[in-house]
Length: 119
Image: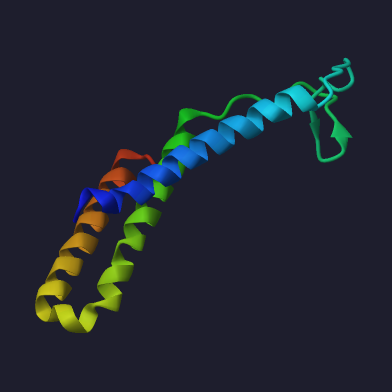
């Protein structure tokens, strides 16, 4: 592959950077800015915020969310294997079985460590 093939990608990155910067600067100078105390109040779903915000989420919540994302992304890696299943034959089946086995070991490890418990 020649260097000219990458010129399109470079041109795209340069154009996107210039366009994004230009639009942000134009927006800053064109839009009116008249902040009032009412405009600076938090607002959600049409209901003014009366009570203080809820307590912070515990780190366990983030751990479960991260585990969900990890296992969800890992499941996406099985899609190309399923598409090329006929071409891969036994070798592809063994590789996918090992992959799913490793995922199962990771899930069991997290389960044993209590990462999936809410209490």
